[in-house]
Image (cartoon, rainbow, N blue to C red; front, side, top):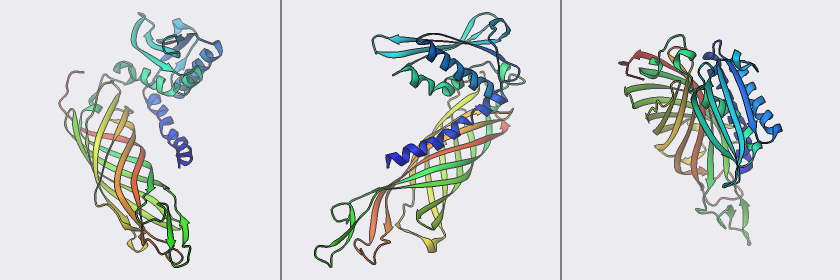
Length: 344
């Protein structure tokens, strides 16, 4: 099952790559210089090249001439003798007065691992640019709307972990008429669930909002048995406005699942309510909106399938699983109606 999960993670990375569009919307006519030092030259150059690629993909101009740049990304790589790890220190500096806007420090097992995080490091750096650099006017009203419409694409995975209830040897369905009985072993299931959803988020307090929504996704528990899963949910979200151009929104969620068409139902028992949580990361894109990615977890608890092999292995009649879903989404928040402005 874990091999399947690793393959799926590669697909999820595509969601995060789309964040380059966020930078492109906010990078008008800004020139960067990127400088690195320390460590092995091949890795310093490799990380510099990775940052240059991210910057250009995001719409920034990149120059080797420091005096021609508005901002300088400086990084150094050293060995932390105490923890025996590579220490990576990166800063965003305003060239005009050499003021440090933000400085971050990371520890990596090796310098090759550091290269995997170039996009995240670049995103965290540039999210700290002043508002007057990343928008046409100093305006953070996008973070303080009364209502947000949140359409999104979703790619979820349902995990059905086999439970031993009623199974012979804890892992197989069986027919006890022969002697010895006939046994067919079962395994865990991982189901792809692509879909689309929409939420209507009401920010009634600066630090809290409620978002009712609907997600419709496709699932195929058995071959050629395609079902549509409609999840009506309510999220309680807690916006953390730490960065000027980014909002982090951890949330708790309760949902009511429906599956159709009923005549193709494969589940013997299905939970009435499910619960979980997640986090949404939104980055400003446009005057009143933001691109976001969403990662969430839902626990369905005990769920049972009809025994589809009852002709040969009639026992037990139902097969029980511990059921949970890991979801990933990408979408766009459209804000409506300004709240009262607050100091930022």
